[in-house]
Image (cartoon, rainbow, N blue to C red):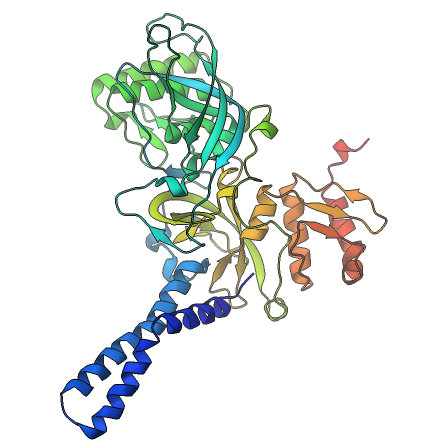
Length: 471
């Protein structure tokens, strides 16, 4: 992992190369000043050179701030942060096509998914688009095979015409990719013309809500709160009411019926009463067949690993901490490996003090966004003085399961660690405390430099093994 100093030096050299005319003009103006003192052309040339030269460090500092995923005191939110619970996640994504008024809002299950095309030509630089939140070159084209559910009971008491399958290619906003991995989408189905196939258009922000990526709550007219995350049947019916009403505002992740117009509030309340009498179970985090929808391996992002460790950082007391995304907002800036998002993180300090919220614009890798329905956690490197935090995407990808972790014992056996984030987290901390870098997702204890910690790693794995799972 590159250090802030390394990123700054690289940006400084690049800025100096791009603005090399500044020092040249400054030298020419200064040399000519001796022959023609005063406010003539030498002064103008020198002033222009000085202005261009000054942009070199300013540009380097600004670029480093944007590129290096660091969080400092200036990023902390004042007043105690956002009034969100720890399990809240708010996702603000670009709007999808709205379809015609006759289109029906239905659920679709993702049977298969594959990447068709994602090939931006930005060379990893930052690209900003004015007035276009989803430019095609930064929006992956995904091939999908869907089963549209059209057999459920509708609001007027009639049944749909039956489930049907449809295949196609759609542009998917990067922040909504997790809905595909989860396997639950919201689609708009247009009325079918005689002899023609019904047009199906995915609603990506609503799909992220139905998938459980974005948390969802409702406060009824009596002030009671209900948890709706992954209550897919009820959520879909609420979405229909919202669409007919022209949209319902969510404050954070909560709909408060006391703020709606009486007619819409009454419809929501009647729906809530129906589900209070007949509660709905939560849908699974991911629908069966996730392996047929797994896009993480096809999309760009940082390869997962147990993590690089700077020896000086480790000796001076640097540690790892976990943080959690509370909010993500799309912006008009993109990099090849992911969109630049306005984010809010809740960080748990290493010393156990009260968590704090920090707002930071970050480039979030696309492969991580595909599993956002399962986890919102990230790994941070903490400076020895505890004043700055750096997002470590390699460790984050491993902890999130984007890349599968493996541990090979000294005798060649593979220890069970995949899908166990708490165990992976413990191993990361052990290696960091020992100043050992393992930049790959495989921790091979047969290697000479890792033999000293082989016993400790084995004990950590044993301590995190649930005896109920043993034969």
